[in-house]
Picture 1 (tube, rainbow, N blue to C red):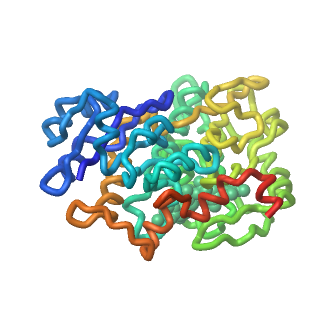
Picture 2: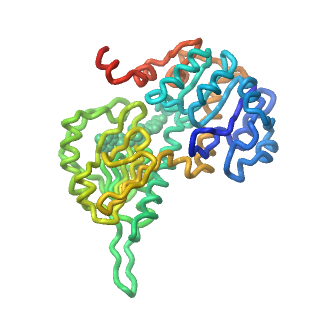
Picture 3: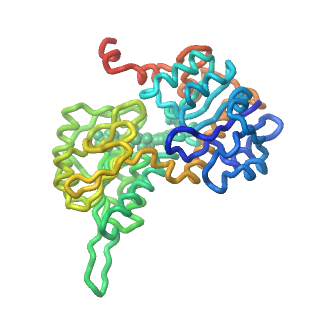
Length: 382
Ligand code: NAD
């Protein structure tokens, strides 16, 4: 079975889907790994490292595509690339069905079996394949460093001969995977950290990291399986009212909720940003899908009345080495789950396969993906 790996073409994408260590694990009697020359920007991912790990290096992009039984990628493969795959090829990547309907329809039309890592069920059995989590963790860490680099203040409290410096105050909104990593990072740097999440179950995790859990007088809608459900507009309005002073009093706000397929909730408003001291920073880790701050401009860092609003997109890609290593491990684990002795076995009775497989046999076979692809008008008409 031939596994193809291409250099990513999406603008700004520096990650690679399979690192040499992942290839060393896969390459052997069951799998041949064919890599388009020069897939990664980091020294560890140079052609020689791939060759040593057992990959075949191919100069021609088209040959990798035409020969692949499985194509692994970080970003959704481009429609032109999908058109060059054989019928029955399996692709594993992020697909973003909510915003990239054409990229989902292309494999369906071409008879490609496409897996979307965003749709992997978040069950314990799938944790080692969960690329959303591995990448969110990097984003939480880097988001805090981005804020610290921009803030004209120390994070820790310092007692110096020239006077005492109070610690920076950091507010983390959403204590999921990215949020918990942001809290831990801000604490390690010595900031005083507060965090809020609609799921009271995370209270203890927040406290165990040395942060204060903000208690707001709000009754959140219970989600399923430990996840937050979408909150009503009334809830969000009240939440914003209750958060206004907390955001206004922070030096740094890190906003994280970004559930796949939903518009992120607006948690930070323009008046809240206006209340922050000049020089403060808001890092919006949900910027890619619309943002948690109403001022966010995806892909840009802007200054509003002296406050920075950082809407950098694809934050994990700024840490391409570890992001690729973790992603690669997620992909190889999923690949091993889907194959038996080097042959792909698509078993729709399996929850992981059923949850993450989006197209198969010429059709979109995933109801969640179908819902994400619907426009709001289509959803309303249903
Ligand atoms: P996410 O990015 O959708 O949300 C991040 C956090 O924001 C969540 O904790 C959510 O409760 C919170 N949130 C949502 N709306 C909010 C609002 N209006 N105000 C404040 N906070 C809000 O989710 P995620 O981080 O990808 O995952 C959420 C949780 O799922 C994790 O904490 C984890 O416990 C669980 N999880 C389980 C598995 C698994 O078992 N395989 C894998 C990953 C995550």
